[in-house]
Figure 1 (cartoon, rainbow, N blue to C red):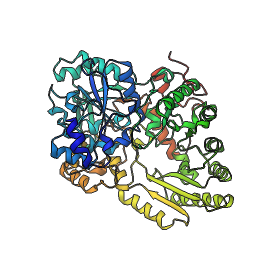
Figure 2: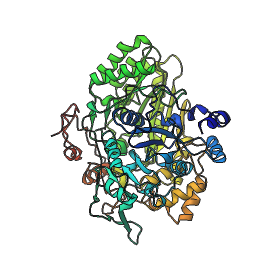
Figure 3: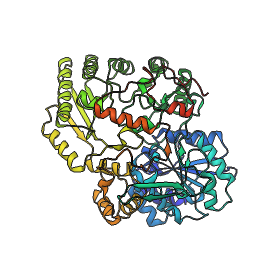
Figure 4: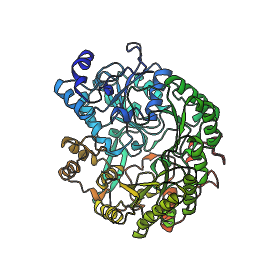
Length: 615
């Protein structure tokens, strides 16, 4: 297959380097001597998947520290898929060019709800039945993980099992167990795997519904299967595996640089933020560890930029000495440091100036809402004054372009809040023009709010497409000169909301949408809303039941069986505080907020946010 691929197939597609493998730092293990063979399948194109930090970690972890093998596979772009189907070429791994059917485990990373149709497409291209009940002992086990797996139910028809939470300890344990149960029939194999902490096997649970369509019960069908699935966490991030020799792609990828994961989790408590809830508790890496990892990655890749990754990088307690040290140690070699979107305060600007002394690129800030009232509702603890002071400091320091992130459709939002975004942007532009020698660029990226599972807003309704479009039109008509507005597609957000809080019945919708032609739904050039509309009609599903319907506190939610460590009582309390416009302070600066995650996982967080250790 390899010869045919390189000689006849790849010259006919765009970006053939996506499909060749053989990059610098690739790991090719002896197939026959390896124990369990797994492929890490990312349901998007190569350049997106190769930017994913979790994939980098798991790839190095399994291949460097175990006797198992982990190879990679990505979704082929439609031009490559067409030729693969015409030529009968199955989906293959980039390390050994083996078809996915040669592996014992195929693990999909679920980063985005609308990757669902790509997953089905990849399974079909691999010659693996898309429905789990159609697979036999000869087929690989199909595993799902990642943030979207915290509500796995819409995907449950297609997966044999899910891994909930951090994978650094869980995945090696799972592969060890897969080896032990290798010769058992598939159903017995899954029963054994379901008894591992953090593993969910959908086929071992029976779901019933009430006459009103709401979930009535979800019960395990075997006494050895847990009623609740507890997420896995790595308690000590500082000693956890992290790759020193990440694969260096031969093409530009989305995040084409060395990456340091400075911390995991976030304690800020934004009520809309899924990752901020499910990745708790906060865990940090030490300065010494991060400096060593930076040296190793730069030495093994030749990258000229280091990105500091986390949900809230400027909350890392050692961020200032880390940034200063990295600039001092590597700046002379032309290596820069990149920060993600910044907190809205002057300290952020000081740090941004530190890393961009030579060239001021675009500064990114995330106020999220246009009025203080609505920022209090979502618990975004920043004031307008802080924003204006930060912007003034940035423009005084020579920045010429600022990008701001907002959301529309937030709970309790009014027309006044939409005007607030426009007024805030106008004031940012006025401040910029006051201090800059030439007109500054002010851009706003405006997303549509999608309520997510395991957050305080999981009970809140989402705006309909029509209401969101009215708000977009309202803001577009009132846009000020010199300010650029870009809006997320309200139809995409609607589907994201459909899947984010869906149940098992959505499996048929996803399947029918894929059959209708849906693929790469996250890419505007391939998104066809009508494929999904037709699928919903064919499945007899009313999408508003999942999207725009408010939920009661008494309702059993499809994801309630997942134990994230955060109590439902805390989420309810936060939702009620939101409706009263009351804020909750950062638990690393004030008292414990009572979310429950630290006692649940037996970790202690001191006021600086450092894990003091397990009990």
